[in-house]
Image 1 (cartoon, one colour):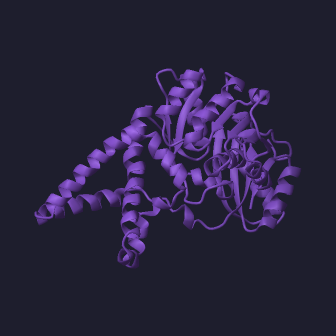
Image 2 (cartoon, rainbow, N blue to C red; image 1 turned 135 degrees about the vertical axis):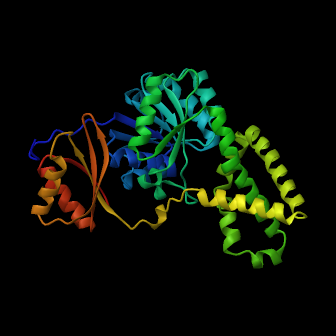
Length: 368
């Protein structure tokens, strides 16, 4: 098929609702829009200021301040409220949900919300946790790239339909993240060790510095890196660890044993050296994702049908008009089509390319 009249691929979802348009919710909404995964993205939030900002920034297509019958038109609902507000939000939305809709969340503790959604009778719920974030919160700092290459844990229960889990996996993959499936209790035990325990350790260390001015004079880069998570939102962090206190207490018990072992090794230099070598091996094997070092991009996302020569048709149309493509990436391919991202030099190039491709019949969305 030529570029003159390509048929745009159908999205995964007709109407997606992101309930809670903060950093993660806003990033999910942007991912849905920029990757053409939903025909319409609605932001639901109790804060008029957040909704105005989300709409002004192009994070969502439209906004709502309260749930209602309009929710029955959504075939994807993402609960992205802070941890303590997650269960109350679920109870508020449940009476209006389309029973066939895929419902998921982005909370960092899974056992409680999974049990609550089962109690509410939300059958197609798949609890999820994207392992991504930033010390800078709010929709202002939302970006689809925050989710790219991130591990996204999905925690189905014994009652989760396989069709719902399959849809959730596809959603996560299409957003550019890597899905990992495990039971809710296994997830909560793991994040207690890798996320919630380090937060409490950071608090303990920063409290020691706060109580001795001499320590604060010497605390430099290494100490700041070690205690970085202590700079997160205090209320949200508090709610996160309290929600997972059962698993966190077990992790704290294991941590105390490790500290006691290391204390004993102070009298056994060879044992301490081996512990240091093991620590270095483990630390050096951890993956590094340097998202912050990516240069600023001016992107245009183009929907393409799954037919021969569609990428060629796009690049030829822009090349003939003198638009220089700096980068190209296939974002998604599905049976009925997919999307490609064009990296362009300037916002003006984005506008020119969008006009050229829309004239040729392609569906596009820009990001400067």
